[in-house]
Image (cartoon, rainbow, N blue to C red):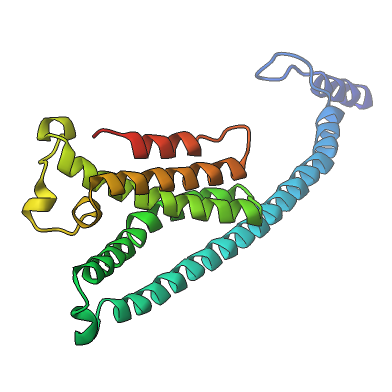
Length: 230
């Protein structure tokens, strides 16, 4: 009986695995489980540490984005408050001539564009800078870049609406004038508007160069925005 029992145990130990057909000693499975346990713990600990780092980084970046949005919102509020005073001149100021009126309208137009297209472009480049871990100097350069490029975009839009045909633009040309909208060419003339665009392009490219980096297309993007014909 003891001999038979021993033979049965030997057969079980060397029985072929159902899938592979190779013998799988009983002790082999125990060894695999023993080796896998510390490896599994190491993987778990590594994943936990990575998760903590990602969470901490996301919190820091979220805080930076929140602070930047708060700062931009405060600037818009302050500009709007000042604009409220500027755009409601006294009767005495209103009578000081067309030049003062045009300057007031130009300030009002810049206020609109800086806080519409300007803020959209500024937010876009700032988010990239914050998430990319940019320095304070780089973030400041991105802010100046976004504001200059956003305003330039709108002035160029005004010029193209006046100078290009509907076929060239891919939309109805002359619509701003027909609707009586405030535009840069109408307030300061096309030549002066072009000079303003050139100045804003210079400001944008200078700030793009301050950002640096091996892959930096911001200067090229600003030139495209300012030199486009449609």
